[in-house]
Length: 404
Ligand SMILES: [Zn+2]
Image 1 (cartoon, rainbow, N blue to C red):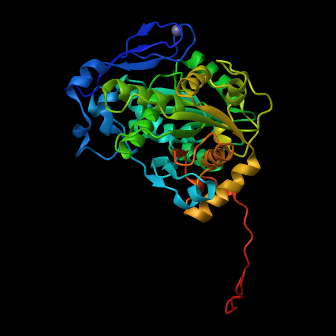
Image 2: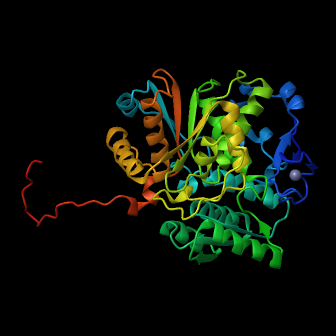
Image 3: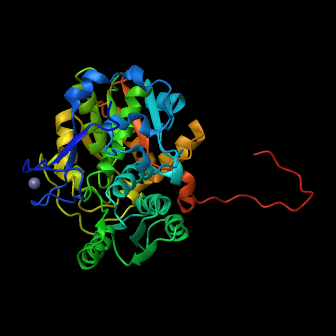
C-alpha cells in the first residue's frame, strides 16, 4: 500500500494535466488545479474497515490526501469534529433530522485548520521556504500557525476589519502581518504583487491545489459519521467556496471507490445578503459570478466579492440539485442567539447563516420534513466576542437577587 494515491493534477477548465511532485500554482489558463488520485487502484486495496483503529483526525484518510511521505505531515490534531444532532432547533424549524458539523472544535477554532494542515504539509513536502496569502482572518491565522510548526515563513495581508483575534494569532506565530484598508480582494492584489516580486509561494485560496484536499475531509467525515449514508442536504457558508467544492469532490471520489451509493446531497451555498455573488449567478442560471460591489456583512468570513473558484461552486450546486441562498445580517444574528439558547452551541456568524438558511428553505418547502440536513458551523463563536452585545445587572457585594 502506498501512503497516498495521488496521481497528478488537472485543470477543470482546459483539461491540461500537471505533475504533483513539483510546486504548481494556477493552470497556465488561469484556472485553479484539482488533485487526482488513482481511484481504480485504490478501490481494489482499500475499504472502510481499514479505517478502524486509525488516528481520530483527518489523516485517517491519507490515501485520499496528497502528502506522499508521512514524515512531512504537519498536524495539530485537526479533524473528526463532532456531528451533533440539533433536535430542539430542528423541531422548532420543522426539520426531523437536523445535524451540525461543528468545526468550532478544531485547532485554531475554525475549519481553516483543515486546509492549512494539508496545504502546509504539502508545501513542506515540496520544500517551500516562504508562503504568502490574503485572508479574511481565520485562514491567515491557521496558515500562520501551521507554517510556524513547519518552520515555513508566512506573509499575511488581511482587511483592517477582520476579527481582531485572528490578527493576534498571526502575530504570535511570528508571521509578517499587514492590514489593508479595504477588502480581501485588495489584500489579494497586494499579495499577488509580492509573490511576483519576491518569488514567494502563493497560498491564496485555490492558487495552490492542496487546501481544497484538506477541506474535502469534512465531506469524508460527514458520511463516515452517518455510517456511510449520504444526507439529503448539506448547507455551507460560502465565501471562497473551497469547502463546498471540497465536499463535492470528496463525495464523488467515495462514489467512485464504491464506499457510498451513487447519490449526492443537495449542496446549498449560503451567502450574506450584503455579499451574494454566487446567489445572484445561481438565480440567473449562470456558470460564473460577477464582482459584488460595496460588499458588507457581519459574517466577515464570507465577505468575498468574487471567488476564483466560483465556477466550481456553481457546478457543484447545479450537479447536486442544490441551491444558493442569501441571508441578511439581522436573520443570522437572531439565529445565532436561537442556536445558543436551544442547543447550547455558540456558533460563528457564518455558521448561524447556514441554520437561518435551513429555516428559510424549510419554510419555503425546499427542505422536506423528514430529510437529513447537515449545517456546517465553520468556527467557534468565542472567536467573535464583538458579535454579541449584552447588558447585565452589576451587583454590590451582599446584594440579594431579584427573580426575573
Ligand atoms: Zn487550464
